[in-house]
Every structure is written in structure tokens, then in C-alpha cells.
Image (cartoon, rainbow, N blue to C red; front, side, top):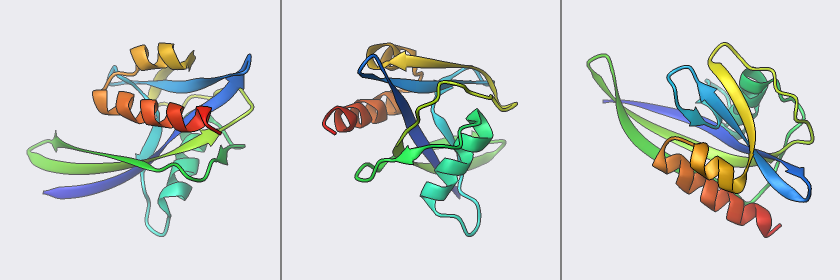
Length: 138
């Protein structure tokens, strides 16, 4: 079994006093967050910020200390069984402008309630619930 490590950001901005969350529509059809592989000589936080630049064109993000949540899952890559860990951080931006990479077909800034309905995977919903609870207590 091959192991992979990825990093991502639950990105939000404040709109009318409430957090709005960035969701990306992946070419495979699901809605999820900015995330991607951790490269050699890169920390998970550096990887998450790089992925935000590459996937959404976001350069000015404040990672908020105190939140780190991991999800783990298995999937198949051809005949190979893969184990993947994705470490998420919470990041805040002031911009709503997104420049999508070729990996995505659309994006949306959504309220917590809307994001919870739109995000595809149950593990992603659980990360959003924890991140939102963390954000509203700041």
C-alpha cells in the first residue's frame, strides 16, 4: 500500500459579519476545499498555502493558529491501494476574486449552511463543522 500526504485550507472571508467559505468544484464532479500533495522539503502549512496560490490564485492568506484537523481515507489508483492523509488548516482572506486552475471547473463562496449542503464528502462536512465552530469563537 502506498501512503500519500496532502494539505488543505478551509478558506473563508467575512461577508456581512459572517464567514463565507470557498468551495472548489473538481473536474471529477465533487465540491471540496483547496488541497494537494505535500512536496519534498515542504511543511504541511507551506503546502496548503502553495495549493491556495495554484488552485485559486490566492496569495494573501492568514493562517489562523490553533486549528489543524486531519482526515484519512483509502482509494484505488489503478490496481494500487492508496492510503491518504489530508491535513487541514483554517485560512482567512479578504478577497473574493478567484483564479481557478485547470483542475477545477467552478468555485463558490458560500455561507456555512450552504457550504455544508454543497460539499460532497462526509469527511469534508465534518472538517467544515469543526472549522466553523473554531472560527465563530475567535
